[in-house]
Length: 248
Image (cartoon, rainbow, N blue to C red; front, side, top):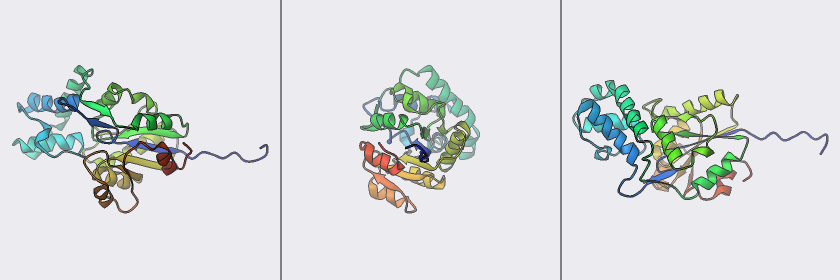
């Protein structure tokens, strides 16, 4: 009505973890590109024919997985850490050369519909916060046909940025504030591991846990200081939008 002040929509920043949150590994070639990139780097730099399956790596950043796997294979921690830059570059080298081989992955139920709904909102910025190296993260999104839903220019916090996942939520928020001119009224991070919950809260975002990985509701709740919201999955768009305080 004329004369009434217009309601200003609040600005919302939503970041998603990838593996176990947006997508899952499947089949005999599960997460083929990413796993083989690790193995290629181990072989090229240290002559080790190894695989990340040798260790428990859920919720870790790629640099952390690199170091911990190499330590498992007998490389001293200090040596593995010193070689991180070249190891990461070898992973990217492999991923670029095999970018069409994003096999053994599938988008989890409800994810594409939710991303599509979020991308239709002018006041919502959508990014990634993942332990994946940045280039590998976007190759996965592109290969699975869902990169188009993320806000352009693409942004986030990645394993390329920091070995500690706790810093990645802050990095993504800083990038978003720079790219999209200003602060956000609400920041949300969605992930499937206790480390995602801790990273969200460390970074000042609302933690939303999803039980679509290997961790259950109780385990995700235990990781929270008390404010996390735990969902079974991302299938209910209305529930997710209500968490953001916006209409679906």
